[in-house]
Image (cartoon, rainbow, N blue to C red):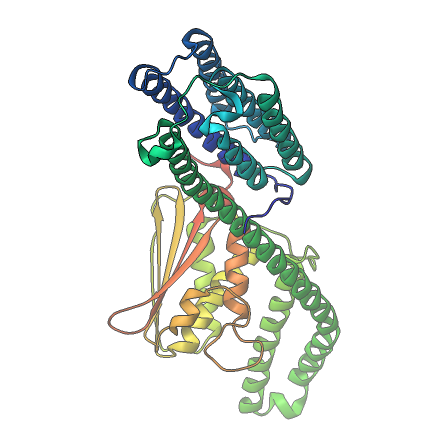
Length: 436
């Protein structure tokens, strides 16, 4: 039901710290419960108890818990050994109180089981096994060396017997504490497992991106030579009399050269994103200029009927032209254009310290299952092999830059995709002018 031998915590995992904080809360309940139990037994049932030594043990437990509370407020992660030591302190104080109040004959001796179960949940195998041995030895020691309380043997009275009442109360206490704290501890473990699963998924996606990048880079290298050959051939054609004397053929050659130039630009962008620039270098620009230029390039090279672009970024900031970010925005616009060939809208604005781009279309919208798995590879409504990689790359590029992408369908029809990116990831901070 519960894992006894936990995986080592990943960096940044706070599961053991949260479990230590649960132990501190449990210890406060133990302090309160001991005070109430001592008062009821000594003054209610008139059972003679050594109050002074029992209160000294209680004060020591309070002091230890205060020190623990101060120590773990720093947020430092706890280790298995520190959890083990904390539980040994609890076992020691329980043993001392039982020794002073009847030893193994005390009905609250079964509280050892609470420590054993918590140890099995919280500790590694060696330390939980050690805790079982220690609690067993403590119980044997109480049976050998402690003195039972002078209580009448009235077990035949049933629930009217103070001993039976103590056993019932101890059972209720054990069951309640186990229900509350095991539930909380399991919630901590489930949160840890969910975080580890998310990290594994992210690592798998990043590995997928690396493989895609290697394939794209290799393809770009292979395409470089035939594209250069085609460029030379088209240049020769353009000078041939057969073409110079025919305006229609010359226009088609010009169109072919334009498309070839676009292909070479795409190949250069792929290699630049892979860190293999083909002579082109990143250039200094501004946020507004960068967005205006990429929108103009996209508009000129796509068959869009109606494209509404509004740049409300406001006070401009310097940045370096980033081909990966440019291709990311182009991917979002391409998806919108494919879903809605007649109308695409791009709205740019600055919200606090973030760049926010909102793309809307008038298409059929996203399928419900795509919205719940936005950015997962091969999740596409287009029904073709390899579909869905565009948004997958968009999500992962933005995540690398500290941004995010959200999407939802519009009530009036169509879909909205919103890109949010921290300005610190793109601007030149050292050259940023003072905001007016």
